Image 1 (cartoon, each protein chain N blue to C red):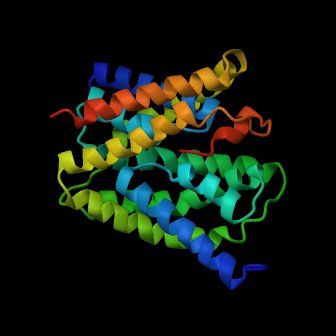
Image 2 (cartoon, chains in turn blue, green):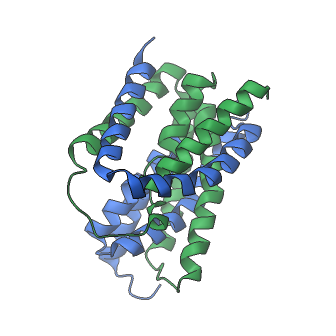
Length: 126
Length: 137
């Protein structure tokens, strides 16, 4: 790997550890950790962090799905549901692009934050 | 799947895709709690299912970046390798703890995400096209 010094390798491994573990533990992609961490600690431009984050999500999510499917007492993956969700999210992406063109991003982020807090509250209820 | 389930899953997917396309966040963060709260899926299965949705999305995203010119992935081979191993470890933990414990972990993540979006999203970043925002799945 050209240019991968010991220090950068250690940093890359550390980011991978944090992002990968949170991906497996929570079922998320890990980009939420990787994008800011790559920018801050590997001195990557934003475009590169996005591309590299997506690239790293591939082995991370493959490993995650594999373990969820095979490592539990029964498969913890709904393939039928995943298919519907995947098709729908492809349809949703251009809709999101259109919305962010028309609505201030800050308002959208605050809205998302409120929804996330509400969802957390609901999950914590017995 | 029942018709109602399919309709609900379509709606969840569209919203998750829209938020991810608009803000670069979302995807799993939206799909997992939506599956748990609206489709009655258990927390671990919702998470495993989310990862199966995220995988092709990431492949498509990488393909799109490749088509726009080759990008340097040199630190990311190592990052991805370590990440895959760590993801296995994280999944093993998720599969071993019980439903309410796992929900607590996910709720903590949502609280951190929610606070970040409400309190720390005010600064202006560099202008980027919407296609770039598939960063956080």
